[in-house]
Each structure stands twice: as C-alpha cells, then as structure tokens.
Length: 543
Image (cartoon, rainbow, N blue to C red; front, side, top):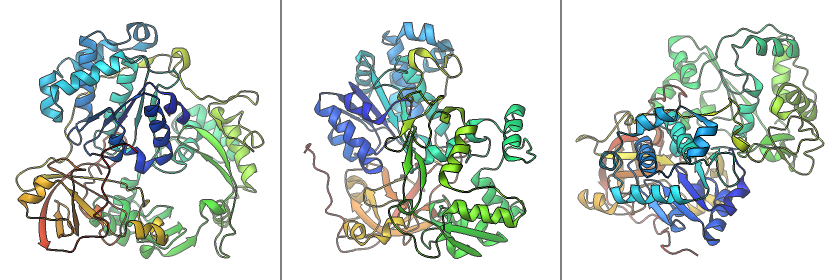
C-alpha cells in the first residue's frame, strides 16, 4: 500500500476494484464504512453484488476480466473533460502522451460494449473521480489473478497518476495483500528474481553485498516461479520439492496437472500445521508452528513491521521453521548461524535499507512502516510524498485491453469466477474450527435466477460444473449476488475441489494464474433439499 489503513476512514472518495473487502479484509472494510458514515463516496467496481455494495454510493458491475478496458474508458472521459490534474502531471510524471494516445480509442460506446457497463455510468463515475479533491484506490486479487493482472495494476496506477492522487493523505494505490505477511515475505526476498530489499539477483553490486554478508558464492541466475517448478516435475528439471505452508493439491488451478506433477516428483517435503491434500504426496512431513506459537515479526499490508509473540505452547514435535531450516543446512554442510528471532531480524535490518531504522526495540509496543532509513526516523505512512517517486517521476504506461484466456461460447456459456467467503480461509485451515463449519458447512455455486430458470435449477439442487479441464459437483445457490451469465464459488472445500475446473493460463509477466475467469457449463444432476447455507441473504439496506 502507498498509504495507510486508517486513512480509509477519512477518505472523501474510495474507489474499490477487484476486492470483496468485507469478506477478504473485514477490518479494512470497517474503515471504509466509517468513511461512508461521514459522507464519503464509495464506488465499488465488481461483477458481483458483494456485501460492500450495501454501503456503496455507486456499484459498477463490469464483465469479468474487462478491468483494463473499463479503466481506460474512465481515463479517456476524464481527459476529454479536462478533469485530470494537469499541474501534477506536468511536474511529477512522464509519458502522459503515451497514455492519452492509448485511451483515445476507448470511446464510451467501445468501453460499454466490452465491459457491459452503461455509457451513462462510465460518464458519471468519471465525473465523480474528476470532481473529488482526493480519491483512494484499493484492489485485491480480483485485479491480479488474471492473465492481464500486471496490466490491471498498471491501469490502476495510471488512473491515480492522472488524477494527481499519489503522495497525499487518503489517496494512493493500495493493494490489500491476499495473505498474512505476504508483504514481509516479499520484502525479505521470497521471490525468484530479487534478494532481500528487492535488489535484483543479476545486479553485480547486490551480489557482492550478499556474498559478503552470507559468506558464499552467488550466481546471477533468476529462479523459477511455481508453475515452472511444478511442470519441471514432469520434464525432470525438478527432482525435489520443499513445500512450506502451501496446499498446492487444492489451491493451484487445473488440479489434474498439479496432481500429476506431485505424483511424478522424486522427493517431496511438506512443512505445515495440519495434514492436508498436499501432505498425502509427501515423503517427509515436518510439523510447523502456527502464528500463535511463533516469535518474530510480520510486515502487514500497509508496510508496518510488527512484533509477533508466542501465545500458545506448540505440540512437542512441532518446531519453528527457522530452526528446521538451520538444522537442515548444517547437515548439508553450511551453518546458517541462526540463533534467535531478534538475531535474524537484525540481519534483515543490516541488509534491507528500508528496514534499517526499524530496530527490534522500537517495535516492542507499536509497529513502524517502512521505509525507515535511520533509528530516529518515524517511518513512512505515505509513499511518494510531494511527487518524490523512487524512480524520479511517476511513469504512465499505455495499456491495451486483452480479453481473458477463456470467454464463454456455445459449449461453455457461463463465466466462472472464484474468491473467498467470510467464514473460511484457504482450503483446510478453518475447517478445523467447528464453529465456522456450522456457519458455512459446504460449498455452493452461486447462479443468477434467470440462468437457473433456464436450466430448471433451484437452490439446493445438485449440479455439475464442467470446464475444458474437468468437472466438479456441488449444490446450487440461486441468488442475484452474481449477475446473469456469471457463476461464482470458492476453493475452500476439499470435497468439491473447485480448482479441478479453473484455468492455469498465466500472466506473461507475473506468472499469476487466471483464477477469476474461466468458461464453464452447468448441468443439473438431481433435485435436492435446501442447503442449510442457502438462507443467507444480504440485506439491501445498511445496518
């Protein structure tokens, strides 16, 4: 996030796109609701009638996978009406003309045809954005989990640069991280192309820095992303997998391919807190600690480095993962020298410039947001203040719309999109909590009443969802939460294995799979009793 979570509460205008905030980030949604109570505009851009739309002043329901076209259409309208911040653009940005030239073709008619958003809605949303003194933009996996995910993010940045909404309170571009400590994991180098602190692995100065710190010889080769690692199990390029805190056999798209990869891998180690679908393929299972049993730091979605302290005593056989890694490395001939969480954190501070001033003692009671270059620096709640971008000036990038890898046709007439529900979190984790399973005990397929009527489907009927990759069976939930032509479900339940049908087409830059869009058909299998989950309906009025 370029800004801070609490700034949502004081926003004048909040633009949410690709984020089911109340269910995926309920705490952050609280701040958004506080802003609405104070009179803020809330523009929710989502194909579904998600819970957050109850608070929205405007809900824009575009077709799945058309975010670039929609954002380009908004930006063309803003430029045409001189609602963009010319002074900010002139002083603080580069390549504005490239953006202008790109969005010029996204007329109201063209944008409406691609996105399904009425022309008058595009005009109204553009006017609201242009008239607002400051707009904060938030997105989540609904933007990134596409074959055009990187383009979607660039378009969000283009919009905020165009409006001059970068570097100001209650502004910015704010990705709400999909999982706990994703920000921290990326910061310390859990990516294939960077060292800690996002220093490139093929940068000679960076290589020297880490060779001196670690006492080893390093090469300049960029590592493999996960799809490459998995496919390598079939080709023979990958002979062993060490899987830490990831249930690949349920969470990866096109699970038939994933299971084949796991079956053919020579040696698999799984480290996790529960047995799961992936551990069934493991040669060795190492019991790990949960967050409540661990000491160390997390860096959250607003770049805040926070202390974590163990609140529970772990089971006897479970060990902190850093201890496991240290002992494994010793047995393989290299002592990592890991002694304690604070000792490891001090190494992070020494190697990552933006962490330099965030000492273990300073975050004893309250976290600090990076960058924080010195011990007397207060941290940085807002990035890019006064147009000071890390690269010098903000860079516009003209982005053309590309359709999803699959769109509906006669054989597969529906879109399928996937996401999260409030009650469950990522495959088996929350299914160990009886209370959550009582609240939502089985997976359902959301289908619009008009589509259900054509297929003679009622809530509780057993249906089959079929894609080019496979099929799943689950109960139907007839609801207007999803617009006509779009079905929706999650991959929380191992009994359903939703990712047997999802598409493993990848973004060419990030290698993120297109979980949010694939083409399916739906067939009724049998009449069924009403599911205990089905009566859940969202109230049309705000509480």
